[in-house]
Image (cartoon, rainbow, N blue to C red):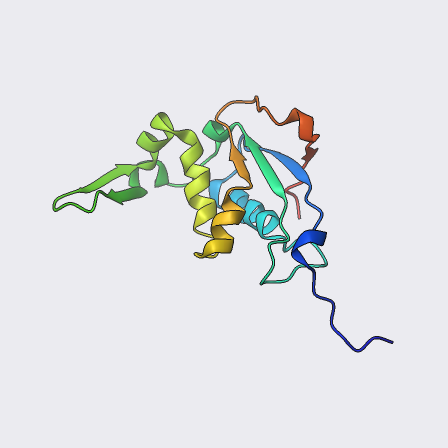
Length: 146
């Protein structure tokens, strides 16, 4: 019996590709499941100091659902770092302008805010429509029912 605890090494992590259809999915519930796969918490060899996550391709991002009055009431802010440079827009305007950003911002809020979190976010590919250019990676359908 080996008394040592197993810790995965960076080079021995096997990355898989998953595709998620966001059509009719609630934004927050979808984002938590995506963040779990990006961080690798769905794998038995998960370690918090190693990026063990997989790639996630999200299609139909424009068809996600926000419950209640969030479409009008939820605000997204950005600042240009100049005086008076605060910009704000609600979720409806952001969806009309760049529907991918709704999912990207939501998932980023659930990832660690460090170098590893930024690397995990790069494994997220979001597309507004039903088409994506990642067929060569042979992504599997990700079941969101837990």
